[in-house]
Image 1 (cartoon, rainbow, N blue to C red):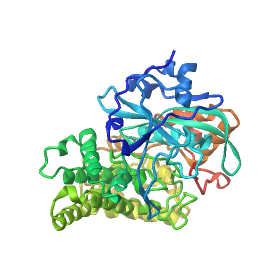
Image 2 (image 1 turned 180 degrees about the horizontal axis):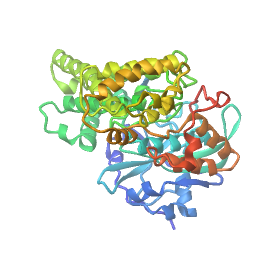
Image 3 (image 1 turned 30 degrees about the horizontal axis):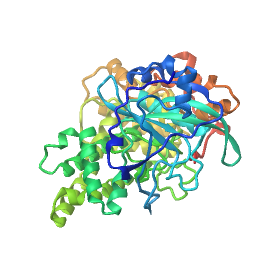
Image 4 (image 1 turned 135 degrees about the horizontal axis):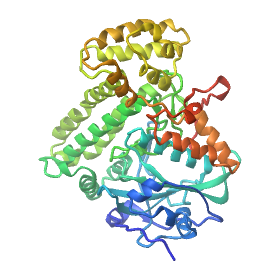
Length: 491
């Protein structure tokens, strides 16, 4: 009996030059790591059926579910600023699309499913580490309230994958609002394929931004909407100390979701120049650079849309430039919203941005842990004598004192009482993030065949704003010997 999924595959109905249709490459001996039961039900799927041998065969790429129309998408992109005219799904197969319980169309994709025409000398496979990392971090992001692709399942393949050495192979089942990227537009724009660009624009508007359809200039309305979503998304990243690590244009989703969790990481001690990615040698995608890289990427999208924005090129350039130039203000407003909440500020007041930046500067100087510091602020009241949980996180605790005085002065402009403010701050400052050393711990245990640390970490991350005592160890910053300084791409 073959598992049937209620697919309705709109991307497969686009012209054939948008993709290559092919099936996943079977693997030797699939083994189940995890099925995301809540997400399965949201997609209208039976999680118990996914865990059967028939379901496992589908999740590993050994069998196609009824209704699937598998394909690998083609796209291009700028990688670390360098133009690559053809990229595409080099190790991913889109099985199809379903409509979830909220009425939203979702892609279901196998990542690590074998070679495609876009593999570029790669093996098309994934090893266990990156699969577990993406499962952990994407689901953590979802629980933290950040738009993101999600993980439906992870399975082992029973086959080795060769990177620095032989690694256990794995496949991730990824769910996304779509997999259309800035690089998808770039692929057709570089080829001057205006028919394809028009079809792609109509597709994205219909699927993600229907309010743009009746606009005088739908392509401009699409650009405006994408820019607004990305401004909010990047502001959320910054409020969590999250570093994507590889913000290439082919890794920026038109749906406004965080996508492609490769060498990503959450900061421990704060520094604006923090880089984890082993391939980001020049710090292009450092924490503080993420907003300006988003502008750069969005400018590439705007360039692709010029002919559709207006027949007069100069007019189109002016309109697109105005749209992209609105990003800094949109981002700053979104950033202020995020950090006001983190600081317990309900009202808007001039100088709030300076107050937040002042704290961040002191954190960088004092090497304070990002997540632990903001969570500690939630416990503070009116008495500076009780500031120990926050000030003790600084290498020089006195760095905190001057800022705390400014903060308490600002709090006098608020109307909420202390308890209400503290409760609101706990809802804005997580106790748990996927700390790098805990992710690595779960991966290393998984490589040895033990998924208990993975399961325990996932249980804590599912409720990141809660602080149950049984997971207290998972929120503690790493000891010096536990610090993870580099993260790696899975290819």
